[in-house]
Length: 307
Image (cartoon, rainbow, N blue to C red):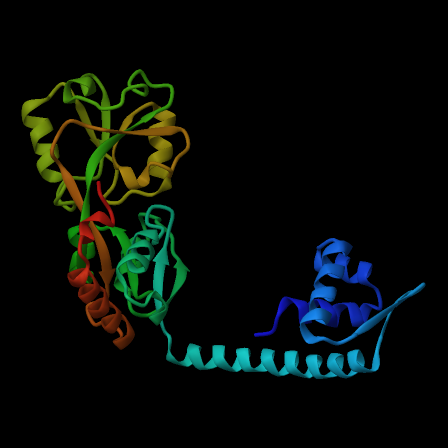
């Protein structure tokens, strides 16, 4: 709200030295002198006089210094007040964030399609992917977390919450970096012959069951083994330690640095989107309505995430 030249002038006046002001402002003394000269020329005023000890203010400079200090103080108060007013009108959405579902999907989407991204403040709330506790996190949606953004193809999860689909990821396979398949860009199903392939248990993840049935019926050469109903970091650790393969998704390729995620030449996908409470808060309901409207108005919402 005030010029850089005024800021430099006030700093120089308080320090009594152009060189000291330059150090405080992380610029060169020559830059400070240039700005001071420009300010005096612009105002047609002599503001400082140089001495052996530094600088002194002229009477006009002393008056401008006091007025500028008052103006800066009032400006800062005005900005603080404006921010406080904005905070009263901005709605806060609490977005869950974990290692497997960090929440960036929703933030990227909202920033791209919303006509006014600042209308909502997105507060990140951490939660654990712990397979033993994840259902309790889902069942408590609406209390501390409004939305979880990511992959939630579990019948148990969907019985406890609502789901708004945003898109889909193809199902891939993760392999340890020292595995014979690690150098491949894409896998054929026959590449998996003789391998131990870890997967979520049958019966809960409806997007995995058809794939498992196809492998069981048509490709018995692949040893499909259950992990649990839900993945957590330990699932990826097991894959790396045992040298097994793992059914996974491209969005999880950075979960474990010792695993490489490779697409497979098949047509199996899993939906991703927003998980939210059966009875969402008014703020969450309003945000979801605004998101749906923004997506409907977006010229090409599918371009937000292309997989």
